Length: 628
Image 1: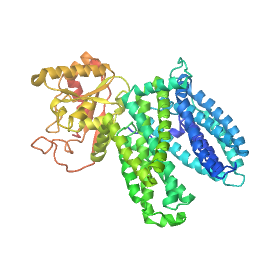
Image 2: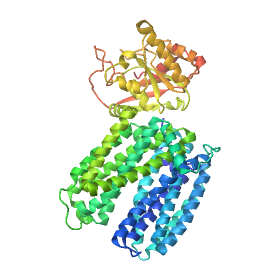
Image 3: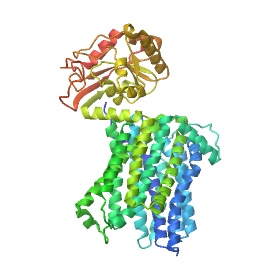
Image 4: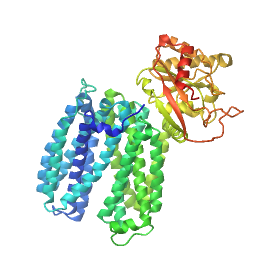
């Protein structure tokens, strides 16, 4: 089954106008924030250096504070009202605020500039929940990762380019007028584009709004805690923004003090990081095969840690004297390593963050998704504030240097990753499955759309190798409960992974009748819960590459729980890494080749009242064809 590139979404009315609207909003916020920083830095208001430092810190805090105060309320509003109309109202609010912001820039008043930052932060906090909760309503499951990737890309680039444009405009003759014109034009354009966003129904139109931000914040966290995986995904995202806040705050100062970088060099280095992150986010869709692949999250955290540590060792031991221009910086080979580290940290950061957002959108209950996103935004803001406080304490009171602070942050990142993956081993399991699939095999897939996106179903498949469940589970978008022979299920070291995947151990009636009966009870429970169950009706691995006789257990399953049965076939695995070909011991043989081309084919579902083991065997044989 072929999928168009994620960029095709930009031409779709259900995504394109929304995408441009949120891009312009994020870009506009950062243009204004950068302009305010320049106003404070050049001392337009006649402030002392101490006052300038105080207001610069206050500017960042005032923009983040509304996310702590109003996100819970924003989540309720996004749940209660139709989302396209809500977005348009928020863009009108942005337009009004930018009119006031333009006036404040023309006649600089520090209190006025600070107040506008707080109000713009409030508008962004109100927009946050609807920004992410609208995506599952407008995108198909196979498009969700790609859509999130595009949103992530423009968010990263808007932060960088908006800051560059706002700062550059303020340094030109008549700077305040240029910035005022820019923010007004961006706001007007954003509202105009938002008019084309199609309707997205309210998730909970009868919801009664609770205007108390404190009690509602507590209630919002209860929704986040409702699903353990979602809660840990939220913590993972929040840690990412904490990690990013430390680096984005400290790297410019490090570049200036330790590398002697001028403004151009600093901009180039930050651009390399942002472009790397954009590349990593866009790669998510391709690497995940157009589905949610949380196995990329451990890969992302490993890359962040590895290249973060390498960045520390790539830093010069002594400070560079004088100012280094871009031409001088680029000619130094030692600086190339720093650029590679920054770019690859960004790329792995993109691989880390995009699947986590898609995971929240997929796993959270639709009626509560906006409030879960609101809870995520609250924690993001709290973690970013914590990053600022931690940096201050470690730099000023603990006496750490900036490189040491960055290294400590990277090491803590490794600890956070280990904690999350220990709590939800599904991340690690999907990572291992992704590695095995993409290292050993090239998979031609067809017919996977026959597997229903919702509701119970049974998959029956031929059994060729020890990694059949890994290949199937890694390519089917929905979680699959595999029925497997109990001796394999109880293998040392592997049992924890099988148990985490909720595999169902089974034995033959003559070997262990009680275990067999318990397996059928578990299968029935999984199907009644609306899950997908996969069985291998041959009862064991093929020893000669031929399809073995299908046993009648599938008939008993659908008689007890009538659900559709999807026949599937693995092609080309006989003779690959983990099959029994050429092995008298009937174990996985030594590898002869890697990246073997194999096939995975699904047929049309068979209604429960038409299921028979003999018919399913013929269907699987036809799907497999001559490609054993």
